[in-house]
Amino acid sequence: MRGAFARRRAVIYLDNNSTTRPDPRVVEAMRAALLEGYGNPSSLHSIGMAAAEQLERARGSVARLLGARDPDRITFTSGGSESINVALRTALALHPARSRVAAPGVEHSAVLATLEQACASGERELVHLAVDRSGAPNWNADFGWLDEQVALVSVQWVNNESGVITPPEALRELARRCDACGARLHVDAVQAAGKLALDVDALGASFVSVSAHKLHGPKGVGALWSRADVEPLPLVRGGPQERGRRAGTENVAGIVGFGVASELAGAWLASGGPAELRRMRDDFERALVGGAGARAHGAATARVANTSYLCFEGVQAESLQMLLDAEGIAVSTGAACSSEMRAPSHVLLAMGCSAEEATSSIRFSLSRETRPEELTRALEIVSRSLADLRALAGPR
Image 1 (cartoon, rainbow, N blue to C red):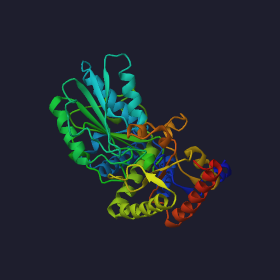
Image 2: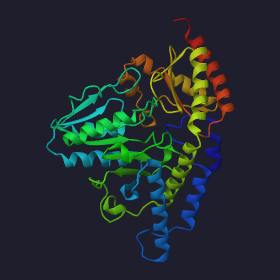
Image 3: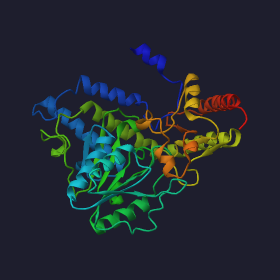
Image 4: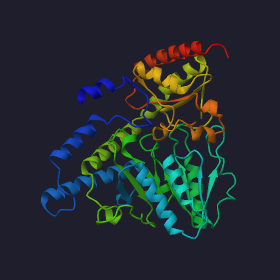
């Protein structure tokens, strides 16, 4: 089995918005938790209490990464999608008589699918908030859509495909206006945690969701931060775990890994790591825009340092992706959660791109592990692959 994974592993991994490689220090901490800290955190003997201490230590680490002063507001979940579902379903339950929910059309499918289901009966309406061509929000100029009939609003801090950042000041203003009319605000920070310095306490949202595997932690672990004036309603019932917010014996090893990953991400942010990553990304992107005729989605607005979503006119993105994979380079045509749907990216369509532009776009997402020489090699291979595909297509 190890050999099979070794043969499949990409030489140059540029799909870090889909998932990241767990940091070896995370893996070692998880290994120790599995073999030595195996107790049930709810047990009242010393082994169980030791496991509970590990769990609370990790809760504190995640809270610090998010800028949450009270670790008790952190609920561990199975990942970002569960955190999102808990937040949205809690907000809906708090306002059963309100007739509208709102979210930009660029949101992750975990948000949009949940809200579409909530509106399927026709008793509620889903309001798609607009973004401009760069992917930046333009819904904050006029808040006429936000009134006492809105139950909840859900907004990404960082878009998973374009890397475009919703400015904290826009989120804070939205939170203030939601509070004024009694609506709940959920902020999807899955792609922001570990890439930006966060301060959820100052944000003013009711809920913020995050996931471990986007910041070099393990898959299958996430967290939901909730404001002190709202208690998440559990999707999973049956026990008192997680302050009664999520039943079931906690995934201690995964949570320990999440804690270590949070500490490492916080140290990387404090050391100025994003600035160096941004320089690498910008050099790589500039070379492709200038030499390969690419256009960068979202380049006119603020983006996280690791993401470059490029449109290569006249090239089918899936064909380019397959050529690059054969050369040992892993990239994506969009969100991993929707990669099997074979439809143009809903994010790019919401940004005003045509279907042709959307199906000609490739996302390159770097991480703190990406090395300059990898990008130099990737640039050579991408340029050559593009030339081959365009030669096969012939003149346009």
